[in-house]
Image 1 (tube, rainbow, N blue to C red):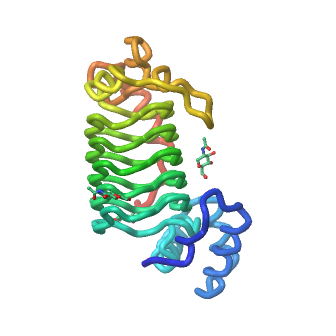
Image 2: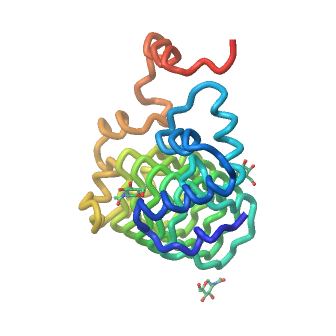
Image 3: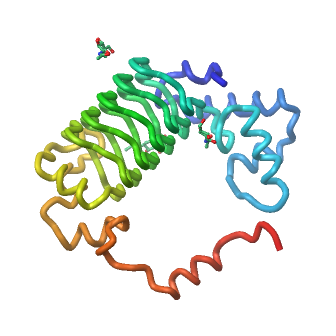
Amino acid sequence: MRRAAASRPAASSRSRSVVVQASATKNLGLGAAAVALATTMSLAGPALADLNAYEAATGGEFGIGSAMQYGEADIQGKDFSNMDLRRSNFTSADCRNATFKGSNLQGAYFIKAVTFRTNFEDANLSDVLMDRATMVEANLKNAILQRAVFTRSDLKDAVIEGADFTNALLDKTQVMALCKYADGVNPVTGVNTRKSLGCGSQRKYKASFPSNPDGPQVQEDEKEAFRKTLPVYRN
Ligand SMILES: *[C@@H]1O[C@H](CO)[C@@H](O)[C@H](O)[C@H]1NC(C)=O
Ligand SMILES: *[C@@H]1O[C@H](CO)[C@@H](O)[C@H](O)[C@H]1NC(C)=O
Ligand SMILES: *[C@@H]1O[C@H](CO)[C@@H](O)[C@H](O)[C@H]1NC(C)=O
């Protein structure tokens, strides 16, 4: 489902996406409560089903109105530069040689995507899920990758000059490979690429990459405390 939202420029104002969301909701005949729910993301009880129906109808996630569906799509060489693609779905998509230069992809899904030689220069990829993605020779120059998940992803020979990996999750071997040539400072966040990867610091690496099987393990009581915070969906 491709909506008009796709042509909106990156960094579009918040008010604009709220307008899109509000009109989409009006067309669907959903009440103000649904808008409030989608906006605050306070998920509770049966309203969750309503929210899912709303998402399916709008092609967006949590009413954000920017999420595009490109799951399993062949988008080789396509131009997605300077777009608002927050939380969009590129799961298993073939993105070879496509360009996302300067786009906002915050929270997007790239699980098992092929991003060989894909251009992500200057893109905001914070919170993306790149699990098991093939990112060989991808261009991540000056990209923002804060809290991104790269578990089992292959970033062989990716361009990472100026990329900001603060709190990103990468495999130990991947970090070691990237640290061999990591360089630069991100022009937006001012973060040093090597520092964000924890290059040259065994202690920081151990503390910041939970995918490291040799790193600190979560204690049973901590797990139990976490489980207690989970909502009860069913009794
Ligand atoms: C993303 O796309 C995949 C493949 O088409 C689909 O299975 C999955 O449900 C989608 N995920 C979301 C969050 O939309
Ligand atoms: C990749 O895309 C660029 C334009 O975006 C094009 O000039 C180039 O020929 C493409 N290369 C391949 C291998 O498809
Ligand atoms: C990335 O995009 C998100 C969502 O629009 C925004 O909140 C965040 O500030 C951006 N990050 C940077 C470093 O600009």
